[in-house]
Length: 311
Image: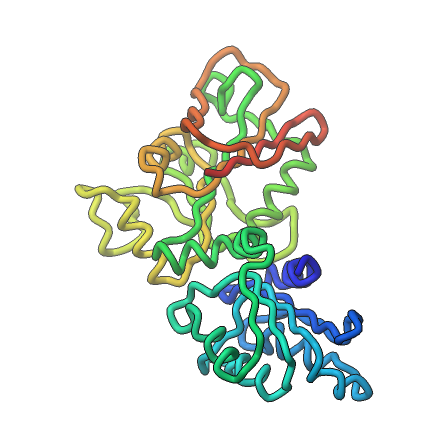
C-alpha cells in the first residue's frame, strides 16, 4: 500500500479533478507483477494501468494474485468504464483497498461489486495516509467546498510587513517552494488591500505548471455577479468555487482576510507559516494561530523556517 501511495503522487499535476490513485498487483508468491497510477484525467485509472503492465507470461498468475489500490475502485461509467468490472474480469482472488471513495457515485459500491463477485476485499489499510493523499478531493466531495490552506510569511517579531510597507521575507528558495505549492492548487486568493498595495502576480513563474485561478475579495470587483457583500462573503465564495469545480484554494493574505477565514473553524483546513529571521519592530501583526492546532512539520531553508499545521 505504501508503494500505491508513492505511485499515486505521480499524478499530482494531471490527475485532477480526479483523485490521485496508485495500484500494485502482487502474485501469490509475493512478487510484484504489475503496477500503475492514474496519470491524467480522462485516461486510464490506476487499476487499468496496473493490469496493462502485467507481462503476458504472468497473466496466468492473476487468479491467485492480490490487487492493492489506494482508493476504492470506481463502479460507474464516467470518462472511462468501471474499474470494478475490469477487476472482476481479470479474476484476481483478493483486493486490498486503502480507503473508500467519497464521490457520490462510488461510496462503497465498488467494494460491493467486488464482494458480490466472490472476491475477498480488505478495506482500511493505511487508511489515514490514503485519505491524506487526496485531502483536497475528499474535502470537496464531503463538504461541498474547496480544501483551504491559509498561508503567510512573517518576521521573527511577528509582522507581515515592515512598518506597513511591503517587504520580501522569503528567500529565493522558499519563494520557489511557494510557487511549487501554487502549481498544486486550483485557486489562490488575496484581499483587496493586499492586491492594491503589493500587486502580487499570484502565478507560478518560479516553477512549472498551471497558474491557479486568481481571486481578489473586492466589493467593487466581485468574483461573481451574484456576490452580495451585505451577507457573509466566504460561504458565497465557497459555493461559487465548488460550482466551478475548484477543489483547492490558497489564501495568501492579507492579515484581515486571514482573520476572516479563521473566524470559523469550518472555513479552513491547513495553515502554512514561513518565519524569517528578520525583525522590523512594527507594522501589520501576523494572524494568531487558532487554539488546538496541530504542528505537522517544521522545515528550515536558508535561515527561514516553514511550519505546517493541521487540525
